[in-house]
Image 1 (tube, helix red, strand yellow):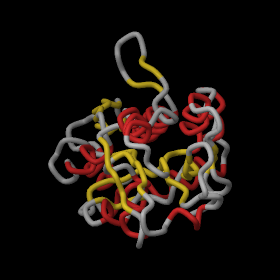
Image 2 (cartoon, one colour):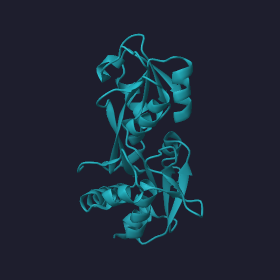
Image 3 (cartoon, one colour):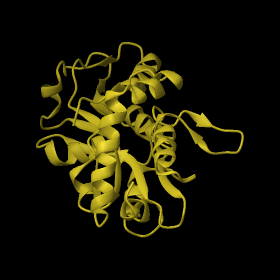
Length: 241
């Protein structure tokens, strides 16, 4: 462990880990002291342990708010979906986990495949500034994105406005589809949201070290252990980066 890496990742003597509370697969609860618990906090603690410093969780209600603080001396590492728009300010590792993103369509929908959704007149409910919203914003050419502030409000808007599709992570959609008789989740995925560890782009030595740590954590079974420990369904260990 070089002094340069430790100075970049723990300049205040602790590792401040930005945690996205809105990802219910990666943050599954709270400890007795109120700290977030789940795969993402466990990864942050493992990184702090390797550095030999305490971890301090810096929670954010939404991933976009976490990303906005990159370089502002609020967090030292951020655990969120790796997206090109975010990578302008954040140096990301390869993904440590990934989650399928697909669509839910209402009963009787003519939309049968993922490709059917990007057509004129199709309105897609989506949670604003989620990783899959950023992907849709870059890739949807003909359909219209209808953004809401949260997972719940996106679902509510999908119902209230009779939208043609609801974009989301498959594990959440598996819950939503049970509330809608006849609704269907489309097979396949339009993207896989890849969860990574990021640090400020100025931290070049730290970024390289984090990349190596994440690859080791995947290969050694540590990431799989965290997924099993927190009993998460729908989350997969990402392939080697």
